[in-house]
Length: 166
Image (cartoon, rainbow, N blue to C red):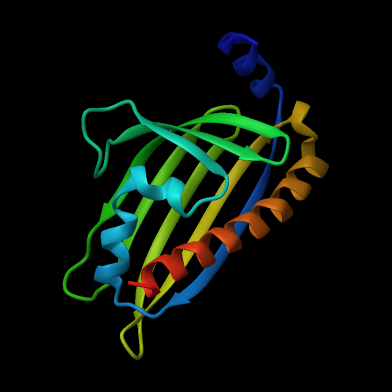
């Protein structure tokens, strides 16, 4: 399918899904951020991320662009993304990273790190995604949201294990 075909199909209507997951990690936000800020390493803890290819010279901060090859069950997509928010925080304060999805599935995503009692971090992952009508419309969007919620919970469990095992 040509890019122009995808744009034409997408413009005919899309349905959205809001997905939010979170976990507590037994490490301070600065330690969690050290791992999170390395976008290229996300494939080590995100089961649905097969490969990440940077399309900009920069690999950190606002304006960083990359393509993430994702696979969920039989579905594969190459998702062009741009970092739109990058807050490294101060000390053990909050940190965040926001992205914009620009492929067949469009939308925004945000990772937020918040310090909680005991030197721990609440990691929140929030996404607002729009799916084209030919991916099932409202029904496909609802189903995708449920599947992605499960996959991303598993991803956060992987990241939690990775950080806490150091």
